[in-house]
Length: 138
Image (cartoon, rainbow, N blue to C red):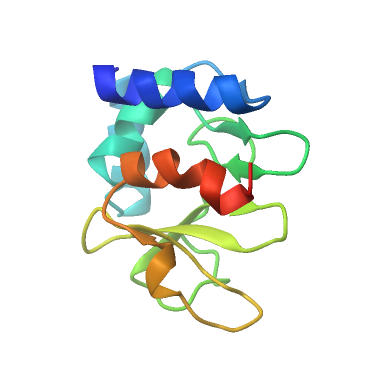
């Protein structure tokens, strides 16, 4: 895991209770992508080497889906604004966390308003993780 990602995880752990599963190896990530004909953002894949999903700011924060561990990312889940997105998790209010299959962006889909707000689009997974305390009001 990169030093930057490690520091972000350590910072999040000082702010609240988090639960991380065991990481998985790179081959399993590649196999998952190939089987499902998707490409996940590089930084998200780096996170999966550390933890195959998890929960942030328990009990009511965010759940990140895994590749092998339930709940598993389902590329066919249609609860998203378009097919260019893959749901990789959800907030406790039910709003899906998405990755854009065209680039490394991570965003939050406001389910009720059927929109993605400009201030809830992150250029990459590390930026998203870094902003979790603000997103969740921690």
